[in-house]
Length: 397
Image (cartoon, rainbow, N blue to C red):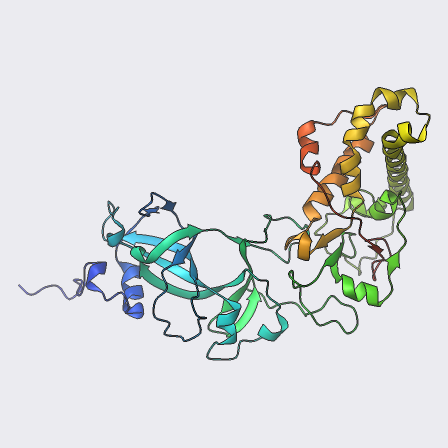
């Protein structure tokens, strides 16, 4: 009896396919094999999907690689001919490649928006260049961190000077650079006249305005050119916190990510707004007093100052707040020695601690703060930085 016309024909094993026949191997991978949860390298390292690996360098058919270039990719899927496959020789993986700036500069077609991007030393670009390869081509597992440049909360993994990282996606079919969410890149520049440069973490420092109607990064050089520098004083906490999240009066009832509806014609509750403003004003005054008391506690022996009984009773608590205050009144910066991601998360955490102290304070005593909550600020060594005025709102940044 002849075989059914619906019967499968062709190879029944990945080993029957030439590993350099990318197209055929990709088609077979899509319909054949058992999906595996992980694979194990020779040294015992386990690799799962969504992790990044170094791939053994081979023939560069695209002719875009630099001499001695190291190849990296992200694991998307792992398969073997059968479910029990544990030998690397029997396992194949589907990957998507990371491109380097050098690759993109030497790409066979012009890459859209590439000239507006200024890449960091260890920056790579994730692509939609998919490929199926034998697992034996994997050299080792690596860490490549994602920097979400669009996240206005300034959260994210710390990216050190030796870490590899990415923020852009290269769309092969469109030949253009896009955001990590596959959206068009925003217009280059910080918004000031004449600025057309994107963020270059190795070459510049940027300042962030966290106020609800701003939430923008500005190039320090642009701010200097506009002569927006403010004088520094020992007591600058109130100026830095004014109108920021937690200290902004009526705007505090709105979510940070909520878009402003300028078409809203509802009548404003003036009494409610005044009450909120008064509460925030009281918080700022309380923080101003806390800042003054901490400085006095630190200097009272050298300067022979007179301190109240409540302050002397809580001397250690006041001294433990010094680094928190220093961090809270520091500007939110990123770039150069401040790192790719910057100081936003740490500065915001310090300001939240101060907000909690003001809200929970009773009588004259400084409330107890868990030492674990203060630990991240113990090694805080941000230098004294000049203060600028935000070009949009005019407040200190």
